[in-house]
Length: 409
Image 1 (cartoon, rainbow, N blue to C red):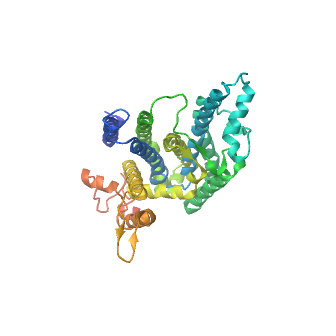
Image 2: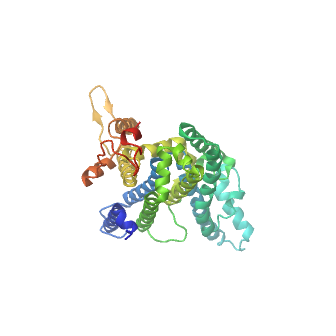
Image 3: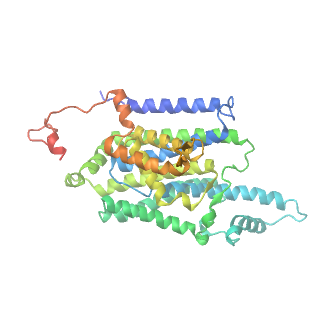
């Protein structure tokens, strides 16, 4: 009798239960719906952390399971934020403009309202006209569709060009980094249509919503938890089936998978595009909680940080990616937020705001050298999950199959 997906993957159910319990506890302790033990700002921090965990799951799927070290997934993350941010900024500005012009004796025309909105949004970059990319900014439905479509199409086109040329390894990582840098440099320009270095701001104010920020922060926490749960479930389903076996085979020995008749490029493109869409959804939920997005969020260093999170958590383990992203993100908030006490040494005072990145880099090197399984390896020890000791036995069913010591070479 064939077992169900959950029966074959009990860790998924455990993760979802822990996520639901965490969300419930934060809700009960929040200022918006609970006793007020957890501040609104920290609820937003936790919500943003869940979004970072979601993009870490996407990164683990493309890197830990498929073997593609992408240094461009934060570009998709940022594009998702820009797409939803355009509607938030447009609609919020429209409400302000309509209320302001409504006090005049002569009712404003539709064109006057649009001109006033454009002047409010783009006046900071010396313009008042809406660029073409803002054509659907007045429609929430279309902008939410663009959250997935724009990063998805970019990933599809870039991946098709790269994979059909069989670019792999470090060269592919450099290409993804170059794509991210090119996008960031374009967005820094004032004529990019997205306000250049100023970015989009005021995203935390939901148009037409009169609820307090404490309540809104819990709403976004729920949405982020739901997205993380669904994203984790999708990723677990992908890696547990035939598709997961194929992409792991591509990671371990791409030439052999191609020799077996699989279209390696198609599988790579599928996973690359899927993870780009997941990253974009994470970004669309992250930046309304952050309140602002600008091109500095998309620079290549952000994607490098993402790879560090996954490596510290444990590459090739979905729960490891979540653990690594949550741990490093919250620790970074503590160190860079001035909450970590300085350490006076007499001749020098260690200020963690300045030394946090050094500590993060050293942690990455230490994990790579001494604990390649990352923090997820601790979960393996706790659950007593050990690989079978084959002692050089055949790895396949037939005589002469690949042996363990051969596979390790």
